[in-house]
Amino acid sequence: MEKILIIEDDPKIASYLESYINKYGFIVKSVVNFENIMQSFHEFQPQLVLLDINLPYFDGYYWCRQIRKESICPVIFISARTGEMDQVMALENGGDDYITKPFHPDIVMAKIRSQLRRAYGEYAGSQKERILEIENLKLYPERFELHFGNKTVLLTKNESDIVATLMDRYPRVAGREDLLEKLWDDQTYVDENTLNVNIARVRKKFQELDLQGVVETVRGAGYRLLITWRDEAE
Image (cartoon, rainbow, N blue to C red; front, side):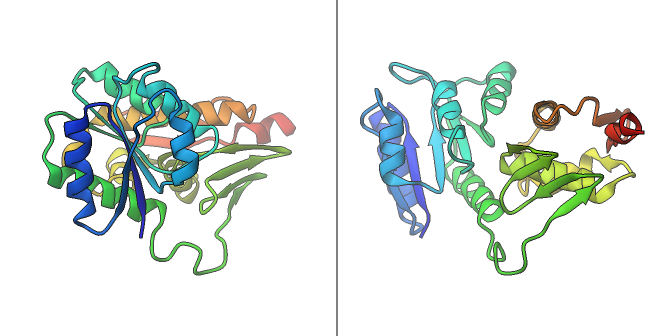
């Protein structure tokens, strides 16, 4: 059964989440040492993290970055901050989803299941590893790795899904609605800005591979992959 780590400094909220999620058969643990959250992460080895922003010592953005240095497990922010920039910052720092307080527990469970389903689906690893390749650009969707030449970058699940969709559709345009449907099962709770942030993150990952201008915005339609390095090679 999947393990879920709760990083929430309000003991009442943490206890409520822990008891509610535990009812559905998950193994749940709440962090108590907020000075060294990564120690709890290493010891528990969770498949998903629920993370508050306002925490003692360092905020949730910081801890999400630390988690992302060594894990691609889904991270769902849960915060009383309702501003658009707070949600953008959460996604920019490696989060996969965002829930505002006060929250309905059924929405929390729906998002947990959605993230776990995408990260550890029942068909994951059951067949030969899938590899997408276009002009020396290789994506390993099950590993969340993007390769170009001798360079490799790690992707989050959302980033990997975006790149896979762009590569599957190449040279056609991947529509915004198609990407939203691919990435989020519960579209009722996702706004357009969430996709914009994830696209920006994908572009940064391409830049880490020294690939510039790879993801083109097609106004009113969506996004398209551009194989810019082929022209340079010629």
